[in-house]
Length: 116
Length: 115
Image 1: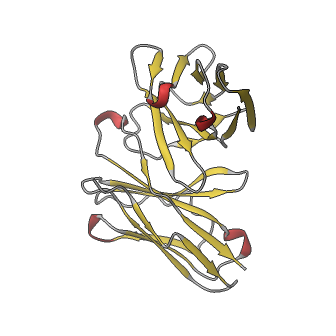
Image 2: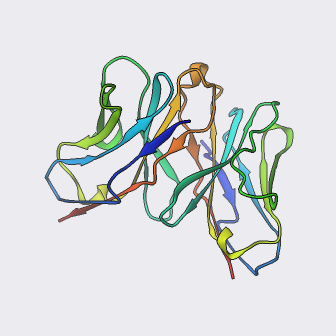
């Protein structure tokens, strides 16, 4: 079966440009998460969608970052006016609507963003 | 607030020897604990999780982890390391009854198994 799909796998952009990163979760997964992985920084939570509830945006590092999830499925992470410190691997994950929050996250292979 | 500490950035072990990757956590109440592995240029893959019950959890590829509540630890172990186990390992925690909230991850430990 299909896993979590992310595109593009690699993106090189110039400072100041906007970028969009896409995530297609596993069918039937109601929860979707974006994380950022920077060298030596581990995984940093960015934003979380659960069903039709308002997203948890508490991890977004600045107002240049935003995300949406259309129709409860595909999500797009948008970074406006990119800066060099935005260079990282952006990972998307989804999970089942597991009872008692026991479910693990299923990750895509990530989108590597390089800002020149 | 929840947090995870992986005190070692790098662990080196000879092939065939036992390996341990350390993890301690901080959470209000009871934890749900997870280990993930990341191979080069890949996403994270789930290895195992502790939810409740037996403190020794067995997972994929011969890995196991032991939940120790008094020490707030969840160390990953394997009796005999393989070169193919070389990868980046992440420990993660979620608080009990917090819904499908995001996992909080440690900074990762790079395991290098030398032939």
